[in-house]
Image (cartoon, rainbow, N blue to C red; front, top):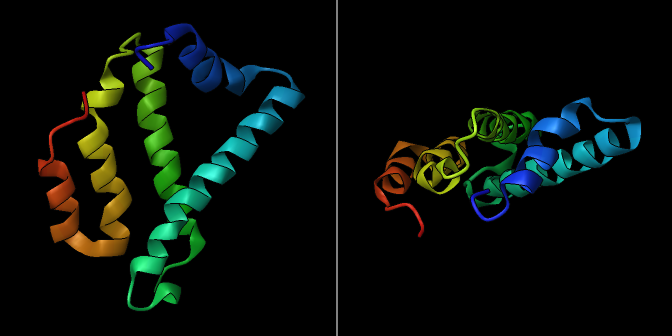
Length: 109
């Protein structure tokens, strides 16, 4: 986000109110991101224990945190939020201890 603030704003904030083609690309990207998060189920003893909706909710929450930061012009927040966002991504699949470990990690950079 910090490397290309203009593109970050276009991709995350402005795409929500763009034309149908851009919104379709945005939706495809969101589904891809949810599928990436959903890979966490494979780490569980019983992958069927949680529905895919958990990944969609988690991905949407992460996206929303980035959206708010970008909308407020805080393009450097992306890296500093990585531990918090990883906590959110890991928690439903690996539990509290693994999520807390993510929270204790230093942000990249």
